[in-house]
Image (cartoon, rainbow, N blue to C red; front, side, top):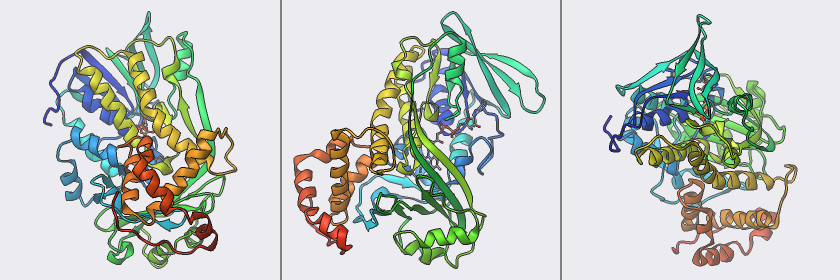
Length: 461
Ligand SMILES: Cc1cc2nc3c(=O)[nH]c(=O)nc-3n(C[C@H](O)[C@H](O)[C@H](O)COP(=O)(O)OP(=O)(O)OC[C@H]3O[C@@H](n4cnc5c(N)ncnc54)[C@H](O)[C@@H]3O)c2cc1C
């Protein structure tokens, strides 16, 4: 792998717990700065390009959008060409067919890329490149059972081999917890005499049910994916994407306990109930390649590590272990990538990363996507949570942005840059854009009521 950063060695051994997306990316940057990097996962991960027990969510549609793709392309030169050579589609984020409130956004060339390939396939591609680095090794089917500490510093991890049951301790100069949402770090912190991080939750009662189909060329009408995103007026949503040369994925989403059925007839009935007809038209007589599978996601969860005043040195936490967002916003992998870049910036200073400094950086990175995801969820009246004026006004404006984007590709492009975590949400408040959004959404209420079509404008900002 070509080095993307000058290699300054800051330690002997870094241990990465969890070999999924966050762990893989962390190992990638740590390998430039530690003599040895060991990745531990309870599953067999090397060579595995299918959903597995430790990561069942990877069976469902995953878009690697915008900033996430940009970062990965920087860490893994040749990413786009390699994925495309494997038949994994990569296209412009703004040119996918997006529906908000059952209205189609004007497609826009944004220059931001998005891959709709199957998550395990992309992950395996990245993992195989990391595993090929000479100083990276894997301990597979190995369960993390605890942290080891001396004074105020983590010194290693306790492991159990899942095949033999044999317990061992692996010493480490740095331990990175990337074990996902089920991370046990809060419990182990408490056992070591530290506070647990405060946890914030937003209950949304979300469910995905997913099925793969054989792809036919006419299904997508020339676009990479068709995505009617759930809204309060149309709470049933879907992500229907091309994933490979012969396959496509359909993930149905339901919120607040409305779980898309996993029996084939019920699944198809749910497809028919979507607010846009083309997905039903595409799959009603298509050849299914898998049975439908369901994943439930009761609540988004954020752990406020950045607020802890005491934290052991040489322990970092990232990815879903810190924050797991409502997945419909497609942010989790991108946020993990952004966190890993923050880690790389600290490593480039030529010293072991300061844990509290890193966790503060992570907190700042998570702020915006957490705000996007929780504010969006609060649009649904049945979701409980505070709705201060900032959230109500912000949501009312976002609805207008999405409506204006059904008429104006420049608004779509601005919106996609924010959704893809490339631009901060404040860019949607640029005076020229605000004027445009308000003008184009003047008739939003009456059109919402009548369902009348919108009309495209062609002028640019
Ligand atoms: C239905 C769904 C759809 C999604 N869609 C998108 C999307 O479109 N775009 C997007 O960017 N994000 C999406 N996400 C979010 C994304 O999947 C997560 O943000 C991402 O998986 C986080 O990666 P991670 O490596 O932090 O954790 P995980 O992927 O959860 O991986 C954790 C790893 O740790 C291992 N592990 C756990 N405990 C132990 C232990 N004790 N010992 C050893 N190993 C252990 C597991 O085996 C696993 O490999 C979606 C999520 C869901 C649920």
